Image (cartoon, rainbow, N blue to C red):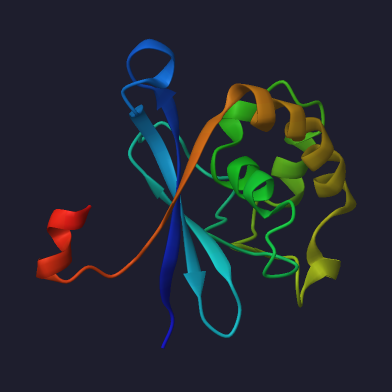
Length: 145
């Protein structure tokens, strides 16, 4: 049975230099586990929309190399409007509902890889991304948090 294992939150820094956690949370990337790992968005800010109809990304491998950058670009392209290749990718991916870098790599346009490299410095310098791994808690362990 498939389920979620990790949440990535993308948002602002709360308080002085992020001392108070994250605020606001613009959107989340949920990491699912099953026969293959996948990523899907959950939006809080309704002004953020994906490229086309993309709702799922399947990374090339479980190590998630480049997958978080791909997910940020696909699920929240408004943060990458400075990238020269974005408009071309939007046209080429307008009908896609998923990006499968594992089994359907041939369906992903070559322009995606150029956009990924243009987006990398923006993701690394301008986006505040935090990760939370999901661990089961029993009522007796809640006080230990």
